[in-house]
Length: 100
Image (cartoon, rainbow, N blue to C red; front, side, top):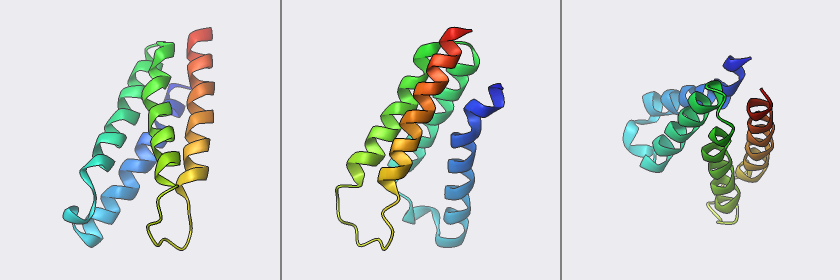
């Protein structure tokens, strides 16, 4: 069950690492690495049964929603649904972690 907490961080790390390999590390904004680090911090805290570990993950979700209001010329706007999914995921994880 603790592995579930690490899922968003691992997927984010894998996605952006592959993107960096193929397009260069300079093409990825440093804030991305900070957000992925926040997801790992969240996962470590939740795995230690600290309910407040959900806060960094929720903050990343809020950031993604805020980013969705900026026009970047992307064909598909994925930030808003991904942000909502992260917020719901981390609320559930915080509740689950605090319940134990």
